[in-house]
Image 1: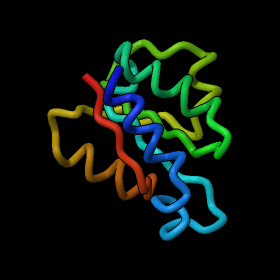
Image 2 (image 1 turned 135 degrees about the horizontal axis):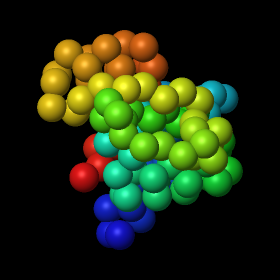
Image 3 (image 1 turned 90 degrees about the vertical axis):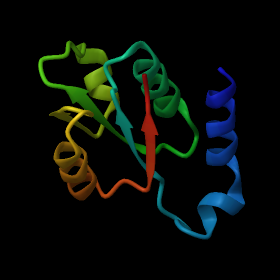
Length: 102
């Protein structure tokens, strides 16, 4: 819970986003997005006023309901245990924020 509020403080800080993204909403890659924590972040980010592009990275075969799928710009399947999967997701999404969930 404490980490969540710290993350949102960073997102809401004009100083932290304006120097990198003047008029562009942030792009967020949520690793382990199908976990309980990941799903919570996706819901929170989807409701955030900056309307970030949320990209979910889920373990292959993980269940991910249709409602949450619609909240994301994209859903990528891979394994957080394989560095190459993460590198490919970073290249594909070009996310400027990365959230690693348990």
